[in-house]
Each structure stands twice: as structure tokens, then as C-alpha cells.
Image (cartoon, rainbow, N blue to C red; front, side):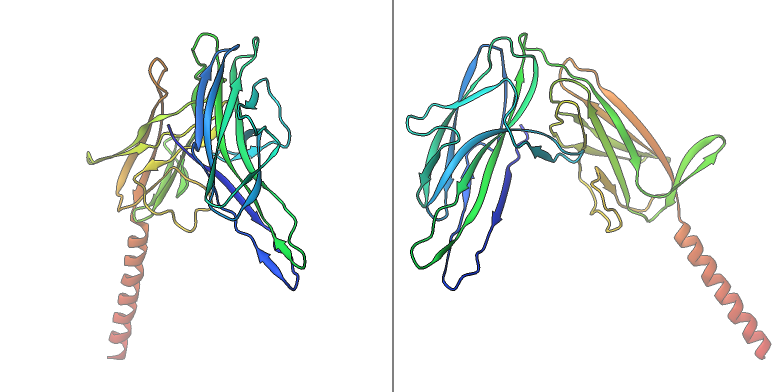
Length: 322
């Protein structure tokens, strides 16, 4: 399971003669949760929230999120929606109600996730947020409140049969370097032999459930050389796109201002083909994409011609002076 942690922290300082600065440092035990559940069932998940900062009041809440872009970023909605029901099984703590956390204290939160009968099949995405709440300062001073929250994402798949809807396709596979020209009716990308080559591989999820592409990108040269770059497994949420990441990869050039899948580095000469082979697990069809390029040593050739002209010019000047 690819784990990721959503953490955002905003600090607000109040300009007064006497200030008491507060520090906030929260942690959560489960950065990402993926579950498959049938309608009419429920599960209980035990989270542990730790406070390594100053004593503070906290609040736990659930909000849905949606994909923001094709880079894996998300947007947390302002209001709750969806058929999934959430509650805390703690005796003294409820969702959306404040509780107190001392320094170096930890609190177990027992999150009950229930899917009502008749809930539509598909994926539902939520963030379990633990937020700090402002508290008044002591008399004669103002507390510089460190306000923030820590979130852990829940990817919930609702299905009656246990089967999931996997529909993935390659929506973009291209090089972000060089120029294209028509060669015998075929568009060919040309680039310099010494250039670093950024490559973008974007996969679109047209199904109702998240997918985890697996596979590799293979580079083949006209002299039989071959290199393989493994794709990292990353979640692609339902009805969204994502640019995948491959490793190993060269450092991204400063001229590239967007996320890329892979950067090829070396000295290339002649024609090359790039193929992407992607699978989505047992029983799902594999998908395939291909592109190609021609690398020529333009910088070397132009440099050689420049030096040659300079040498010829100097030679003629010497002949003329003699």
C-alpha cells in the first residue's frame, strides 16, 4: 500500500508587547487507510493521535475530498457529503467536539465506519482531520496561537460482490524536449544527443474504483541497447488522471516547469523507441503505449563548424599578412 501523509500547518502571530509563543506538533498512527466493504457492514479503526507540542484543545472531524489535478494532489471539501456514516466509539470523545491533549500525550480515537444498506457501489474518499482549536491567553499577555491540523486519508470502496471496476488507459505519453518534423509522412521528434529528456506518462482512471498501475518504461536503441525504468505504484482515484513516476531518473532540468515521469540522461545517437507496459492487477487487461525519437549531435556539429570557420578565417588572414 502506497502510504502518504497529508499535513498542513498555519501559524498566526499577534503583534503585542508580551507574547507567549505556542508550538504545535501533531502526529497520527495511520497515514492512509484503504478498505473494501459491503453495504450494511461496518468496521472499527483505531487511530492514535499524538501531541508533541504545547497543551492544546483538539477536534476530530471527517470531510470528503476529491482529486485536484493530475499530480496526485487533492482538495478537501468544506462540508460533509456521501452515504458513508462515521462516529467515534470513545466513551468521552465525539466527532466535531473538542477534547484536551497534554504535551507528549496520545489519544486513541476509535473511528466507526458504517455503510448503510442500499448505498451505491463505488469509491468514497474522506480525510480524518484532527484540528487544534484556539484558546485564550493568560491575563496581561496574548497567546501566539499555533493553529493547524493533521489528516489521514480514507479510501473506501463499496461493493456487494467484492469485484471492482478497473478501467485504465494511457492518456498521454510524450517527450518534453526537441522538435517534431514530418519524415516520409510520419511525424518524428528530433533532439540533441546530449540533452536530458523529460518524459510524461499520464494514466486516466475511467472506472468507479481506484487503480494502482504497475509496470515499466523500456528504452531501446538502434544498436541493441536497452534500459528499463520501473513505475512506482501510485493510487489513481476514480474518474481522475495522474502523471506516474518512474525510477531511477536523472535530475529534472531547471527548464522543465511541470511534473514528469522520468528524465533520461546520457549521450544518445540515432533512433530510439520508448514503450510503456502497464498492468492493474490479476484479471485486468494490460495497456501499452509507445513513442520514439531521433537523437543527433547538433551541438557538436555546430561547434565543429564554428571552430572550422574560425580556423579557416585565421589561416587566410595569416596567408594575407605574409
